Length: 232
Image 1 (cartoon, rainbow, N blue to C red):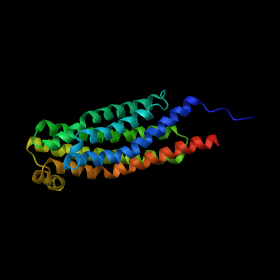
Image 2: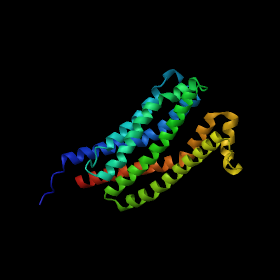
Image 3: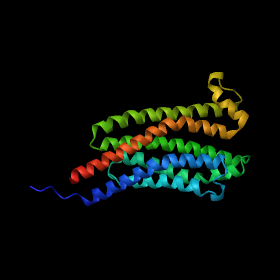
Image 4: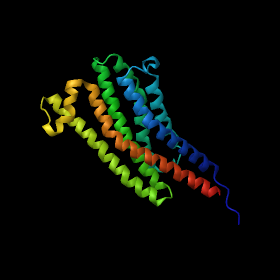
């Protein structure tokens, strides 16, 4: 008996899923490099707000593309909605990276960049939760187990980074310094300025970022193998 014809709607949603995963895979490192360089260097100055705006828009596009997959799954949609809201917030805040580079002493711009960094970290956490829900829906037990383990580790590392940064900022606001062992990474902020704190946060998120990219790539490969294997 011949195989049933593939569902066009399912194939279309899988195509959107693959495009979205690819956009997120390439967009994450590019957005990190571009936003940091826009904040600290001058070689992107001639492009204005366009580089950070374009790279964060690419991430937003990726998240909205994967939203075409399994729209009826409530838990999946809940995790995806959070990621979509944060991606939109990142796009809206990204121009402040350039403006802060032009006027680093402006408190409003400094606060906006801090909110942008917080939103970006939360976006990475939410993206890991999206990958965890997505892995649970795909027919690959190995991917499911790896996604569960690595997304949990990513979330722990990212939340620890947020907690440490929040503890420092809270202690500074109250006039109570952190214990010496915890305060060492932030002493350079007092000496060299707010930008060093941003660089420290970037360094702390490199490992979760790399693991997230690996999960994005493997998930895309599982989807492609599933589609072409079924077609064959």
